[in-house]
Length: 501
Image (cartoon, rainbow, N blue to C red):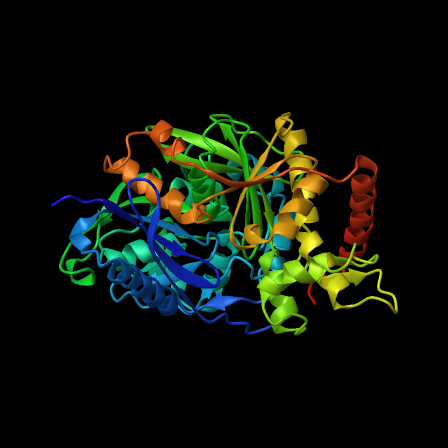
């Protein structure tokens, strides 16, 4: 039987998605299901592990049903996932040890401060390419083990397993036969040596993480295992690709050459530059991370992580009730000539790159009696583009490469106002692809390459198509004024709460 499809499972921060692609990388079917966000305390964010699994399995089956496709027609499954989110579960039963701690969660800021006080900043930067921050998995795992008496001893005996969301889904899809992750996800844990491509013993010892609970680390393209036959029409489908969501989007955008950059506008905002075989250390607060492992080599990337992007628009809709629908933001922003002097810094969970301030908090500045909801909406949209500007400026300094063009994707890339503002504030063209599902597409490409569905990266690059190009139209002096005002606002948001608050 011909197998003309690849299925991508895209497990995100607010929803699980499944997308079926054909050989032309066209979307054949898409299914999506949201799941609950759990906020036990201010700054804490959790997910129910079984909700992640059940929604992801549900949408996978739904996508196949929508397309009228039998599982036997699927050549491979590719996985992509929210990254640093941390889970622990029992090997014997698969029962989770409490909720997953989400990448956005700030509960381990104190543990990070303690690690810094012990002098580990340089070691973390050198070995992992990361900075010490509550964003990453290491201190989340440390916290989980601390909270459950006897957990470390159980982990040392091999009774408890750690994983990011990809590892959890691989475990569930294969009926507990595969406990593995890929290099891109491993590089986000703050426990993985990205040069030697192994778990770092010094860091494991420093925070007392038993090595026995860690997954096997594999290349991003290759057969990880096969699905349990009972899950999909009695067919075992190879799971042949895996990458963290941002690395998958870089791959899906065909950013295969050093110097190519993409920005994904999702719950957060993530900009990655392919640096090829070179690990480029950052002097400006960016992360050096693994892009993917493919064809016996490892490609690296520089990354700037912005914690709040689309989440700021959700805040306007859900908490402030300024918007009925996020989609209304474009017209509302365009209804005023500018933000009326209003500047929003959406540091709700601290600031990511290039500032890395766990104690910053959201700030609205420049309000006057004439400020209205359109000004607030416009300023919030502009804050997404301005955060991206800061990251790109740092990226160009580190890599010594002047950007000629930015590829964009993610939900907010559909917002024409934001994309035009992004081009204006960067001073370079912004290109949006026809198929916006680049994260899922990257996972599909990695899986398809492993099973011969696509020949090579050249064949994949030929499939990329541009939907629209946004050219900068703002004069340089106006751009500089906007950036200057933004940076003043960022300074006022920093160190807002005291450590320990």
